[in-house]
Length: 283
DNA sequence: CCACGGCCTGATTC
DNA sequence: AGAATCAGGCCGT
Image 1 (cartoon, rainbow, N blue to C red):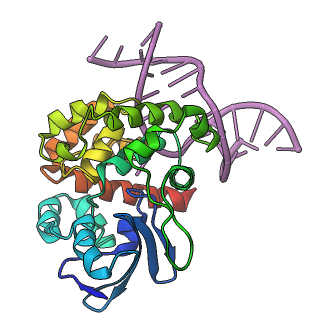
Image 2: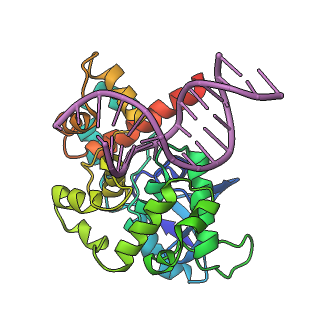
């Protein structure tokens, strides 16, 4: 079915920019797993064409709108961020790249996987977790699996996770899965909490520091002012904004929110994407 | 509070 | 070719 959209949306940069790890591009189609469904979408006149399985497209469409963050007024954010010259240029290069509104649990575990890793490996690790502990989706075409629930993943032993190539992150994932499955934290409810409260709850979890927590806050928990500082952002800020001043990563985060304002998370993702493409070209 | 080294692993660089 | 280094960090000292 056709899902009509009146907001700027670029599927490639949105789905493949390293905020989510389960989307694959095949020609004009993007294939992913969300809301327990295998989903295919592609750009179409006035919106996107949507195919889903096993659920009906009409049931998936509103969920997908939410996931894609289509309630967010992107032009308003662009207007706010364009006061910064470098951001205005980056927005001009990647118009329609949106911050997703993902499932907090899947997002958090994915970013625990990300520490000292790279996108290719993270993608493979997350897929392995799904294949081993998720539920197969019945459908035509390539078989894919859901991301395991906290309860499903809590059954995983750290050594089983290590066998998937997760390395030292295996212990973190097993521990955090058990904590969440036990109900010690309600990740979804963190959407209603303040940034500071949600951050505090997240960094209490194993394998979750300031950076990973800020990824979950930005990509899943409605905190558009979250600002994850990784090596790419560190380089971008040092070189483009800080003029040689040395700041800790935490201080960079505080500086950035002050400088970029309430949508600093969007600024972060544009800087990250820009910087990473730049690095990919020169390396 | 900050700095530093260790930690799994696989791709890339030297 | 085989050894360092790096890759979207976290944790303990």
